[in-house]
Length: 238
Image (cartoon, rainbow, N blue to C red; front, side, top):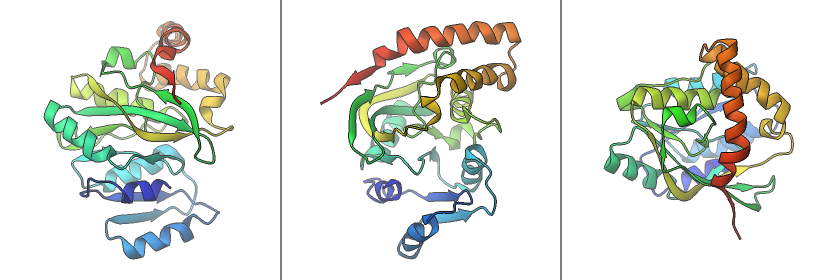
């Protein structure tokens, strides 16, 4: 469904770089038919598993476009996702953009939950919580250069968007439209709250280089934001 949602985009000037992280299922068989019929899809097959950060960085290094976006294999986009965001970014002279998105279950059925994009997202606000859904984010590589994920076990996407917003020296701008669909799995990282806290601390302490005390302070701010502020941006839909 992820590939199909890219093929369906009304914006046609895209390239799709697929990094197969040494899959053992029928991924290659599924992808092969698209390689025959579509000239702007490139497959990179890894012989050993390297993880999400390595795969994203490999694709970023090969990308030729002015804008860079991400889409994991479980998720998918609305057909006007790219056209809406790129037009908005050009009009607003925006370097980093993201959108609202809807959650779906493992079968693709709606969970009736929307994650609303904050209209204006500063670096300071982004430090408190990862408000950019990775499947919705786009950054302008022609302005910011190519921004890569750090080689940390988890939360690489949050780290990347922090870097992008910091380098932009302007807030990221959010679009209220639901332009992407995030598949929630029972074994996802976001479902394991204890592990999530550990990786959040490591983002502050190891990646950003905060002291242990400052990292704990920001963990407190994160928890406040997570439980008392972020729920305001989550709404039920019918």
